[in-house]
Image (cartoon, rainbow, N blue to C red; front, side):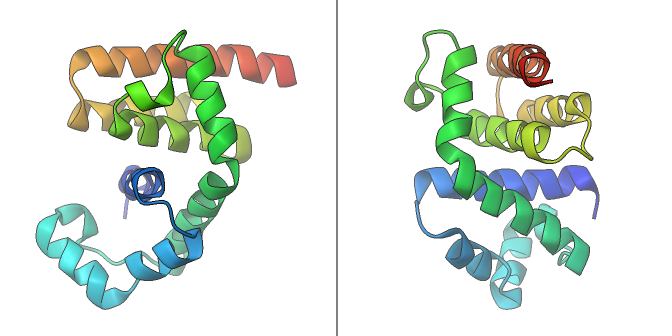
Length: 151
C-alpha cells in the first residue's frame, strides 16, 4: 500500500475521531477487524488491501497521536486560519490538516513539505479549489512559523 493511501486512511480515522469521539483503541480495533475492513473494501477501493504490520504501526501511531494531541492540533488550525474556528471549517479539511500537522510535529522522518503536499493532493480529491487553497495557506503558515520558532 502506498504511503499516500495510508495517509488517506489516517484522515478517515482523524475524521472519525472528530465526528464520533471514542477511544482510539476502540476505533482502531473496529477499523482493523478483518471482516469489517473487507466490508469497507466493498465500498471504497482504498481499503482493497489489508495493511501490513508496518502499515498498521503507522496507522496506530498517527491515530494515537491524533487522540493525544487533538486540542493542540486544533489550536494550530485556528491560529493560522485567522479568525476561523475549527467548527466553521469543513470536517474533511480539518481531518486532513490534523494528520499533516501531526506528521510535521511528531514524525521527524516525514519531511514537512511532503506532509503538506500530500495533504493538498488529498484535499483535491475531497474539497473544492477554494478550500484546498485555504488549507495550503494554513499549513504553509504553520510550518513556516512553528518550525522556525521551535528550531
